[in-house]
Image 1 (cartoon, one colour):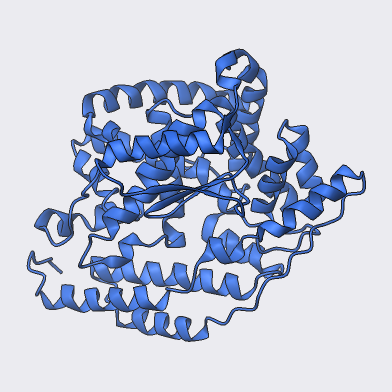
Image 2 (spheres, helix red, strand yellow):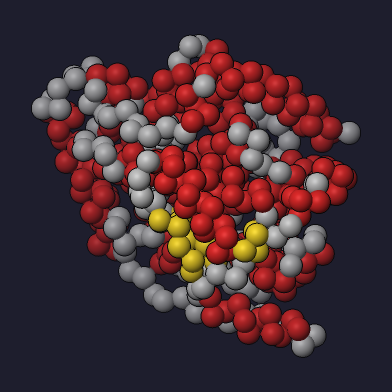
Length: 417
């Protein structure tokens, strides 16, 4: 079926109406927000650790019922034409949101582990290209970091930056990029993670200490990928779901954000180690390690107590703290990075850099950028209003990709040694 450039095309209008229904149906399915722990769980656990008698955190999840939303999603999937690009996009999105709803309905049970694995994968799955498993790759990067981190970090890179100072610095960076106040940087004392990003707000945990690398990482990763794709997605009159963080786009979103760190030189060895430690911790929890054991794993790896708690709670979101399951979302970082890296190389090779641009027109998968290409080319879908500066320098991008491919191949080859 061919695509018409006119928004009045019956097939386009039909699927646009279904997409609007999808946006309304999933409004309450906020996976990461509802699965995360309240900040009040941190102090009692850390107090028990300080006393030398750590106690498993007590986490109670509210009961959720998304049956009405799931029925609406089923209707949308039935009405979508699988032979049409927009129909396939909607069906894939419905399946992802339905899994997320089921996961939220199962919070606090072992079923969350299985549902999370369907959404995000596991550490035991192979890396893209039939390479080593994600866990093997993570262990390799942890080893490299342990060998090199002290040698590569200059003294000035180890000076802590306060949340207040970083707030002012990052706000200035963002105001300069957007040439106005589009995204607000705020301090949040109730945030467990060090930082979190939405479309128009980036939150930093009050009292947290940051490194000099964090400023660039938050700018390129959180703001110019996660926030920027949400802002561009809000401009899509035809397909407003492109502004939403559907679970199915997580691998591409996190891969693109980590790739942005890599391509701008903002990723440091400690950052790569933190990502890899989380993957190993997920495998440990799924293998039976409880929250205390995983917390100690992060502590032994050099993280401070508060950071270790935050890292461990990421692993145990939604699952019993006694072990045997995990929230596997952090598995996607390495897989997503390799997939996005490969995609950019292929698009540059085929002189299709515009496909890379379209990835920033909303929150989508790599496959979506290709499947929806006729809609972008005809003007039915809007191009991105904002693009990160590095993406507009194609020659530099191509050179950096060629070098990083060579370097990554050397590093990945060492996994089998």
